[in-house]
Image 1: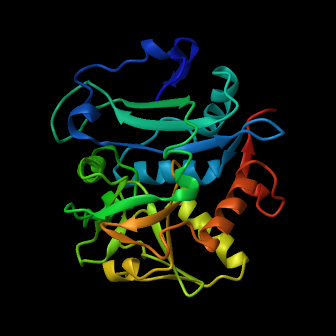
Image 2: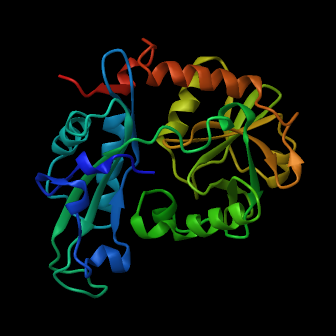
Length: 307
């Protein structure tokens, strides 16, 4: 996944370190217990240079998650924003994926998590597409996972490091069974999300998506809801059943990594006609214009990294 890292840098605790020298102690508390937070942010190539999509919103969520797990971040939001912007000139990137992380140090062990340093790091790298390029048009297959979504809203509503084991297991299970992704159900038996994506369905030219009782209120999810409503498309957040998905005319995933990707098959059943639908395509095209700096209507969602 990482390309040409020999000349890349990672920022950690106030300074840049060579990619291969950016290590942590084996007794780092977060490594053992998973108490830490992170974000997934994406920047795109535009005529004005790299532009980061909804940088302020992602950084706000990073700090909000840290607050919810009682981690006091030792630097300001403004500083983290500045570092994320600087990664592109420092690493000579026109676009890429950004991973800011906040984690606890190695001063002591145990669940009390007392007297530990708080460390902040930011990495960025080339990541052109999470799914194959063909998936943007042909769509992907998913299966109903035997792994249910976490019922604790702290885990499902925030990007907390230790909470992604369930998603990893669900995705590995799906891939081992020949699918591209997993569909996780919530504790009440309703659709929750993919292993790392929000899900939408289209029925009779209206859009439906699960409410956020158990799934992440993704920033791409929020963006797609805004875009669809601006098109005059009705969007309803509600409990959705497995049968709702099977009977949908269209379905798609959203997320920073996956962007907007059609879902064209669930288990053995094609969704709709088994191809990307017109509403999904329209949202994809609009999203592409936005992130590439070609939409005045949503220009406030972009933060350009060049001065």
